[in-house]
Length: 211
Image 1 (cartoon, rainbow, N blue to C red):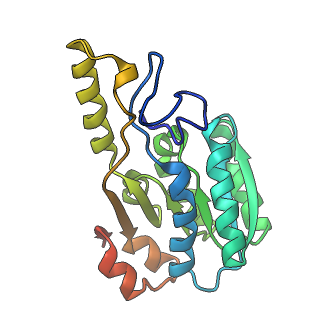
Image 2: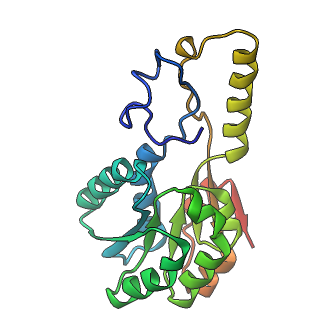
């Protein structure tokens, strides 16, 4: 569950026909990384340089990074890559971004960013850095924005497959499922604290605005 690109990562032969003994749910975070850059530009129109923050120990981050770099080129932005490997790296990572005069941060989805969401939100606010994540929990914890599938939906899809396999279905015959709904969460409190005005177009399209 929650794999960015099961085919590109070599986990399955194809989404339609996984083969072998593995199937599951993709979170499509590889494909959403470019969208995150576009959303950041909408809320920070003066942005010219942003940081991609990733967990370098996650194999999927390489695939996510390619999409982020492509979006940066298309939008004419400079991108700085900052890697972390453990939670102990967060403090120095945000100092590095601040010194580089980054004007926004795209956090490439990884469980470590979800588990330390309060700390990351505090550091981003301290260094006055707008952030966008892949999970709503990060925005609810104080991050500026989040765009991606609902984690609860991923779990329900995975549990349904577990049930079918226990009842005799073969993983090789079960296509890898993908999210069908994506949500945009904006933290209005954080936007105000950063001195950012949320465009009306984002307010209309947002699934939730935290006030």
